[in-house]
Structures are given as C-alpha cells and as structure tokens.
Length: 405
Image (tube, rainbow, N blue to C red; front, top):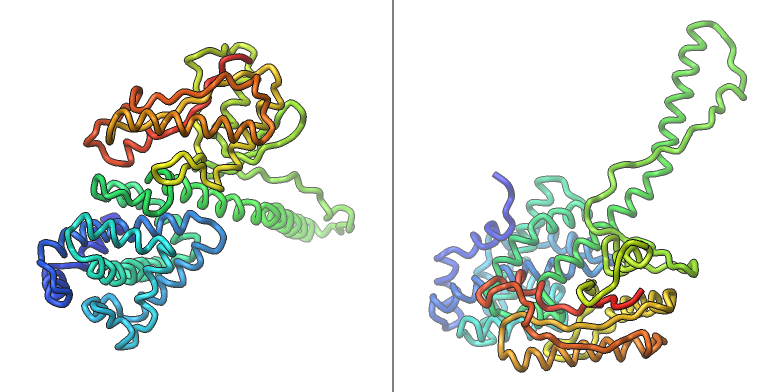
C-alpha cells in the first residue's frame, strides 16, 4: 500500500489520546477531535510551506524529523500535553511548531481555536504536540526508506495534493501563513524540488563523460593487449563527445527568458514571462481583448492590495518585457473567487489591479503602454462556493491582457 503521510499522522491521534487531551486541557472530546481534524493537515501544510522556502529548509526539516523520530515522541504524545515536553528526554520538541510556523504560529492557533471552539491555549498545546508527531512520522519513514534531505523533499511533494485538500473549507490557513493561496504552497514546493533536481543534474554532468572516458580507455587497453599491439599515449587520449542528459524533471523549472534587446529574465518555464514573450515573438498570434496571461508569482498581503516584497521580481520582469517591446500595450485585470460579498470582492479586485499598474509604472514602464486596470471580482470565477480552497485559489488572480503587439 502506498504511503499516506496524512493518514499516518492522523492515526496517531486515536480516541484514547483525544480523551486524554480533553481531560488534560479541560475541553470536550468533540472539540479536541474537531481541532485535530484541522491541526494535522495544517501542520503538514506548514511543513510544505517551509520546505518550499528554499535555502537549507529541506535539511532543517530532515534534521528535525530525525530528532523527533529518535526522541521517542511517537510513543509518548500525551506526555507533551500541557507543556510537559521537556521531561522524559524530549527536550526541545515543543519548539518544533515554532520552527515550522515561525511568527505565524499565533495566527494558526487562533484559526484552530475559532474553527473548533476550544481555547486558544488548548489549540496551542495541541499544535505543539502535533508538530513533533508529524516530524516523527516523517523521520521514521525517511529512516526506513533510507531517504536523505532531497528524498524527503520529493516525498513531501508527492503528498502535497492530499494534504492541501484535507484542510477544512474556510479555515483560512493560507492567509495565516502569509501566502496568497494554498496553491501557492504547492507551487513553491515544486520550485524548490526543481531547484534541487537541477542542481543535482548540473553536478552530475561532468561525471558521466568522465566515466565513459575511463570505460573507453579500459576497453581500448583490453583489446590492444589481446592483440599484443602497443598503444601510444595519443591513441588513448580519445576526445569524448558530451553526453546529453534526457531525464530532466517534469516539474516547473527555472528558466531564462531572452528579450529582443538581448537581456535575460529569471523566470519559470511555462510561466507568464515565458508565455508572453513566446506570444509576442509569434508573428501569427493576434493581440486582443480576449488574450490574457495570468501572473504566477504575484501575491498580496491578506485582504489588502499591498503587493508582497517577493512579488516585485515578477513585476520587474513584466516591466522589462514592456520596455523590450515598445509597441506593446496591455491592460491589467483583477479577479476573485465567489466567497464573500460580491461588491467587496469587486472593489478589492479593482484595488489590486490598480496596485499592479502603479507598481509597473514605478519600475519605469511607460504609462502609454498600460491601457488601464479593471477589477472583475467573481464575474469569471469557475469554482463553486463549496469547492475546496485549492480549486477556488485558481479564481484569485491578476492577469495581463495583450491589447496591442
């Protein structure tokens, strides 16, 4: 049976543990059970979000998972209730939730409290217990399957859809974590994986030709000895043709988009920059009001039109495209899902579209190339109100319409 991380961690919180938690924290068993239904996928989603942050995040998670697995935490989860995790040789386990969520831990605790009806302090205790439990389960699996940090990252990626779909509708974890949508968590993780894979691929490129060269020399010596012929040094220094690796990852990968002026943009293969430039370079492609390209790395602070700092890179890329194609004219569109008040959604979508126009102009884009901004709210939303947040996330977007080439 295929490994299911969500089910494995959820299975740790059986009826007996729920009963002990309720007694220890002074809550009802129903409240604890409901809280755990939100906490387990939230902790795992927090791990996905951390894993996608790049740098040494995968190594950090791998280290914590090893510590949790070797601490005996999985056999004594009840011992961590009420801040008891520093006893019994489990020192430091209660800090793992903070390592996962950072300064967003308080936000997550309040979400769980509001969702389940238990006290914020109880939610905090349960999250502090669930974090080492999840990491312990991951560490145990990594040890059993001989995974390193890169392998652990790939395992998490294989579980992401299952984890994100399990988050209760309306919980609002994306906002608590400071990301635009749950889909952004998956996108970040895919980007981190492709970065690791690309690095490994580049690191191995020199090794394959070397091994082939050694093999060729070995075969040459073998056969020439068999024929009792002498081989000169020049004969054995055969020049090997470079080996092309055709096992590139299918995930979205880093990519250089070349502009007409010779400059290059750091972007994603298949991302908005890649698609726009390909369209602009296609002599047969016609501009018009129905030609739209969605931003794929543009986020706002929760409930506002303030563009996040990490989104500025894509703003600058679009501005560079406008400069490289001086006859290009675009319009910016803002969209929301169907959740909430329609009028408020339309207002927010307009404010966000306007914010993008302002940001483009601030980077030097010619005002004459931007024909305006329009917020459409949920007018073109495809996901129903009761759809998962992962589906509704596709409707929350900013897009660029190419009106003139």
